[in-house]
Image (tube, rainbow, N blue to C red):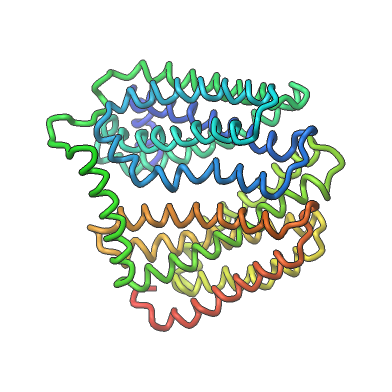
Amino acid sequence: MAVARDLRILLRLRNFRRLLAVRLLSQAADGVYQVALAAHVVFSPEKQASAGAIASAMAVLLLPYSLVGPFAGVLLDRWPRRQIFLHGNLLRAALACCTALLILGSVPDWLFYASALCVTAVNRFVLAGLSAALPRVVDADRLVLANSLSPTAGTLAATAGGGLAFAVRLVADGSDAAVVLLGALLYLFSALVSLTLPPKLLGPDTRESVLRLRAAMGVTARGLVAGMRHLVDRKDAGRALMAMTVLRFCYGALTVMVLMLCRYTWSDDESEGLALLGLALGISGAGFFVAAVVTPWAVGRFGRYGWIVTCAGAAAVLEPALGLSFTLAPMMVAAFVLGMATQGSKIATDTVVQTSVADAYRGRVFSLYDVLFNVAFVSAAGVSALVLPSDGRSVFVVTGVAVLYAVVAVTMFRWRHTATTAP
């Protein structure tokens, strides 16, 4: 009841509602744009998508988060945050229109990817700015609740945007350009809503001293190196991060394989393949949700390392058992199991890092965590591009991933006896 009361109070705060609206529209547009990009690269009738093309699309979607992310805060502390929302979303709306034109025209693939990369790179500044601005519109007592509500609502908005993109693509007879233009319109609406916020409300506070840009960039780079050295000393966190990086690599490799199966093996046309992909992602997302519910109990029962061992071990057994048939129903079950295993391991890893890393290094270590998490996924897509056949059926990928899961399970089982963190 207290949470519901605080939530009602939060939603009565005018500027919080406005900032939340900026987030919802912006992330809904992200969901639309990502579905349009995937549909154009993988499911367009005129394209014979390869695993390499899928890997390129994943790099466009994820690498800006890894490469730009650690340095975004340096600029966010120098530029007015409301203007970042305004100009960033206006820029993305314009770039999305350019992407739509490139889809309609016959242009080299690199030009299309460059346009998409610019849209996703700007996204990192907007999302980081939304988090940085939240304490300016919410009092300290309700900041934890606001931090829980806003990202969750944003994720739901991105999911809804993806669903809307599927619907528009169906109505528009498979036009990816129409879907991208819908994303551009949502970016524009987000920019207009940001104008309802007072210009100086969101900060940053310019009364405090700010390092020169080059010095600030240097401090950030040195901080990441210091975080890496700290991990060497804090073996519990370092080992958990290594395990999570391998598990994320496995999940990425299997994601690319499922994309190829949806496109060429399980469907006769592109629309059906895209619908199957949406179903697979939804089922995997259900596994993520179940992991969030089960993990607190499981960590209490098995310990943090023990739960990672359980997740990786279950994946090592079930992934080949379900995946080697390359048929639809068992692979959908595998999507749920691997979604649950991956997210369960991530929650446990987050907790290990939070409890075993010194507070002064925690932000830098989580920045490294973010880089490893996304680079592992993109690397998996790149490796899959080299070994996957055109129809996605690869015994080598399925068995290779199972071996990696088993290695993580065995290694973490051995390490759990030397772990110094509390269970």
